[in-house]
Image 1 (cartoon, rainbow, N blue to C red):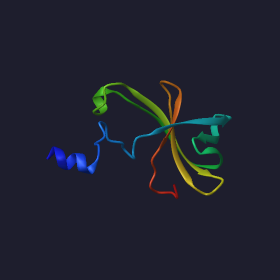
Image 2: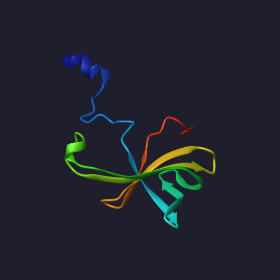
Image 3: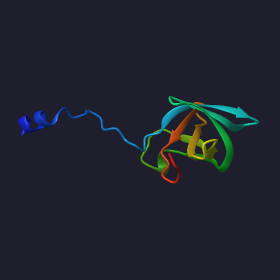
Image 4: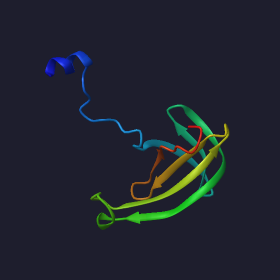
Length: 104
């Protein structure tokens, strides 16, 4: 069995998830996202299609151990693509979440 695995190649110690959020930077105007900055460059926001209210959860609400507090946005970018992002209100960081409803 070991020889078969070696023939296939190495196995990653930690599987990568396509659903794992990736950190991004967000420029705001009046508290609303106006530009996303990621590894692909800068992306102008043309519309906030949906703003999800603040969501706060604790250990009793799910499998995680740390409290969660975030605000989400579904954005339309200048190229017409949709991006689902959220602002982690505890550590003041922004993330993009995988979204299957758009062209991205």
